[in-house]
Image 1 (cartoon, rainbow, N blue to C red):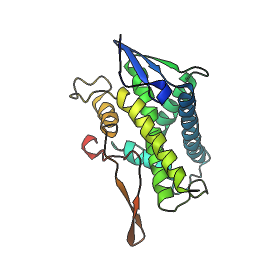
Image 2 (image 1 turned 90 degrees about the vertical axis):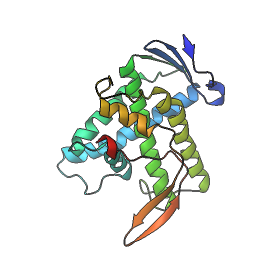
Image 3 (image 1 turned 30 degrees about the vertical axis):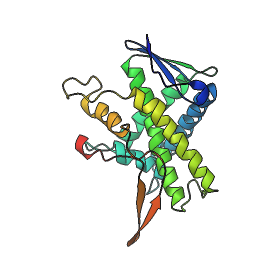
Image 4 (image 1 turned 60 degrees about the vertical axis):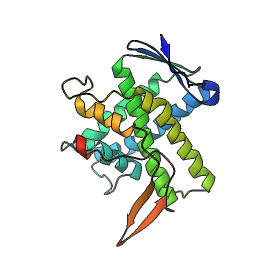
Length: 226
């Protein structure tokens, strides 16, 4: 069994012990509980959008966090529902799999790693959009950013998810014929998870543009994988 050398759970890190396809993650229990809360929150936001569709009255513009997921996971002519149903189902599965106590997670194959990595990735996308909107003085769920410390807190949580879950669990970028996750899914997760530098967000407003500085994991263009 091999272990990642730099994941001390007491410092907020994660140790991934690997024996072939069987991976065991050791988390600080508090961080794992926080991950579950993020999963549950995002699942609720997406369910709200799906309920609007079920009622036949979807709002013209989805929640900005949902819109960000649609932008980054869109392509191949997929409809909004075709994108959101797999996302919300993965989130529900991972939420159930997060242990109620302790900090040990067992992932028994690439399907488990892909599901957990994808769920953490979607949370990163949503938090990135949340921080971007707050940085620009906009409301999210009817609430404006309370103070600069909140931006730092959310940004750090996003960076933690990316560093300790998304990046370690990402599949290797392989030729289309060799990628077991199918080429587009594997490349999607690998690209967004690839230690992209922090960026300043450019947000369009009306005829002009407002430059907003953010400090969290940055979404990357997926055009080359469409």
